[in-house]
Length: 116
Image (cartoon, one colour):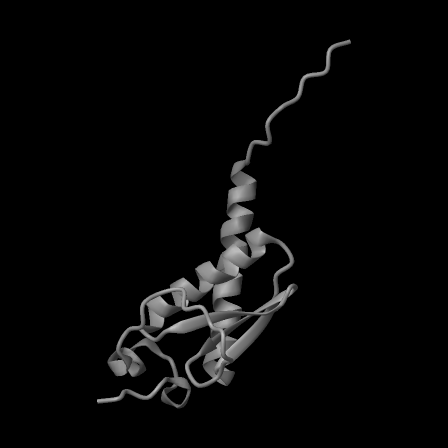
């Protein structure tokens, strides 16, 4: 008997599930960050960490306000706005001006203050 090893092939259902999962993360974490200025989420595997960094990129683009990412420990990441995070933050995208904050729906109380 011959054993055939097949490569793992992603099905359309896998892609839909991943897309749905990313949309839920974007919505839920976005709401939490807008309310509190930060959100913590478990990330045990490198792919989970990449997914959360992608969410931070997308939120930054959507709000035109920098969303930072920081590892809290080996099992969780923290996404936060300026003034709501810790020291060794890694910024996933360039900081945009805060002039578009109200237009994009992020509460002004959670937005970083402009230096101008």
